[in-house]
Image (cartoon, rainbow, N blue to C red; front, side, top):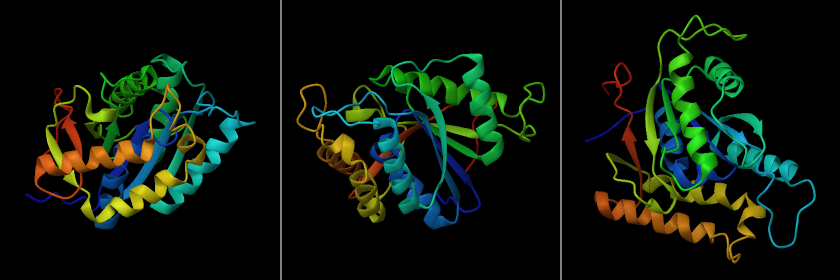
Amino acid sequence: MKLNFQNERVLAVVAHPDDAELLCAGTLARAKSDGAAIGVCVMCRGDKGQPRKPIANLAAVRRKEMITATKLLGAQLYFGENTDGELSDDSPRRLKLVEIYRQFRPTLVLAHNLEDYHPDHRAAGRLAEAASWSCASRGQKTRSSAMDCSPALWWMDTLNMSGFNPGFYIDISHHVALKSQMLACHKSQLERGQDADFSPLAELMRLQFTARGSQSGTVAAEAFRIHDAFKRTRAW
């Protein structure tokens, strides 16, 4: 079975800089190669993930790292500007994300699974789902006009695959090099690889896309589930 992203507009809504690299950059790269417009919205500033040797102005450093990685991908980049550890699903944050949707106008949104390990991931997932509905509501007022219809939504794999039962897989075998190059841009986080409260990200990412590839009969894959709520599914 082949899935083609031609003429689609794919937006990944992630909690932190480097989350897209870990969980969906291969799919974004594949969509881009098919002719889709792609975007990444990073909800948090990445200001709390300090390595053992603290970095001054960490949020600015991580913003620059994210910009560099996104340029490699050729995606539009949006920032939610929330403090790490404080992201929540509330009306002001919903409306800000609704406005981002209306600017980018996605046909497909990739979002964190609601049972992922990090509270910011779970909050970003809830916001992504709520905004994907509200963006088409003319009663929800933002600067940009309401979308004609809500985008489809796919739940991304959890980090380290914990508790996630894939609904389907995207073959990213031809995009692993780019995915890895993007992660390498996040030097501030790669430096935390040996910290007791963190993980070696490059190895974690490789193990994950290799395992998902093995499960789906290919070299490398990323896993997703469809958000199958009423009026939210699409035929592809």
